[in-house]
Length: 593
Image 1 (cartoon, helix red, strand yellow):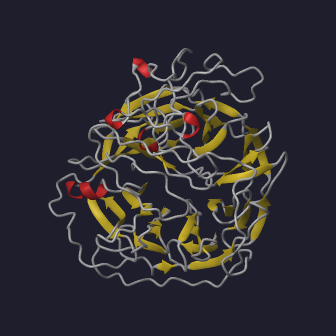
Image 2 (cartoon, one colour):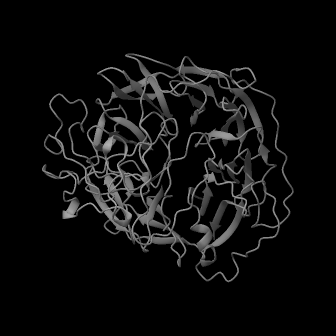
Image 3 (tube, helix red, strand yellow):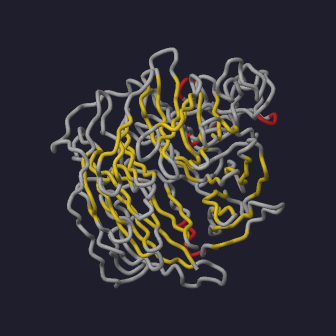
């Protein structure tokens, strides 16, 4: 199993090179030095104790941890390095449960404090994990920005002339490729010697050349015809079955800085790219793209908002036919098909600034309110995508930061409280009231990317949900982990299943009443995709795709990755390129039968 990179969080901007993790040998690598507190740096959250554990000296330095264990020293006998605000940091900069206990605090476990409006105020820390730290968010005054536009006036997104992509000839080798869809002969025939029962390597693509400083490769969209990937300045599309170029590569003027994780029902996405290369450049240029044809639709520029509400970084999401563009303190909605402006979400109420949005089955907004006052808190809202009308508002108690959305339908959110050394996973009903909170004594470990300069509500992999159940992977320091099914009505465990290999297993999606999960490869065994029945008494994994041994090294080298299971095919892609000149970097790998 590949471990998260032992590195400091990427420094500001895009393209920080990714350092490959080392195999887990001996003690864990030295935890990275914690970044200084402030907006935009991933917060190293406190390490929790078990849910519902009685109060006592648990959490004091050297005190026994869960199950009577003591916190382990760092490598070479060094003590754990402190994270922000003095709490110990776990190995690799990860979240909960790496052997460092957290303090208990007053209040009976599972019982809200008097006067609490939220069901988790005053609770001890839940043992709930994610692969990296939650983002520290300071609303209100966020960071100083310059107002230069690096050339080019700021204009609203408007429909522009379509520059249709032209289909490329279906010629050339199937497996090889760089990010542009070209490439010479494949040095390895991955399917040579493929054994009975092993999946077929449908195709493999190498990445385009990027600067030595590295580049982002965000987004992966799969339709019935094409698999599409963004990398540096390019957007490339391949036939899902054979990997042949589906259309000419789209090369944008500057590097891609944001994408819509979702696609519309008609197969449209929007990508954003920088308006220049200087240190004043902004992520404010929009381009709509048709995934099946490669046609370039409307283009536009995202204007800055008021003071401190810059488009230096933005986030994009799609809900229905609405494109939501989030700036640092507001958001603007556009018709995703035409680029026409629909409505804006600005400061409201008691100095509430919308700081993050999440789209998909619904449109969710998170605001930071009264950031410099005693009543500081976060608010969660559901918005009507077409009109921006607020359907409901849920206020979180002071100190709680909404960091991630593990699912939008049903709505499951992960929140943190640095002052209480606590975090929580809660489910909300369709009307925004709390349905349940996870109360499982476990150390969970979904894969969540770094959130730089802003919250990234939907940046987690390794979680899945259906109408009544949340599926989360446990943390495995060595050997197999488990997937735990959690009842969203009660927050209690329904069942759990162990990985069928001595490697971690991650939820991918729910399909036809079964949970589809990915079992990671090891140094001598390829990965596999398995199906797990969600109903009944037996939850034994059965193999859907067994990857061939010929791609073990390649499969295991996707350190920063995205995964997808669609129409019986499994896709792996890179989300960050290091800019190495030593060899071609990988971009995308597809398996099938």
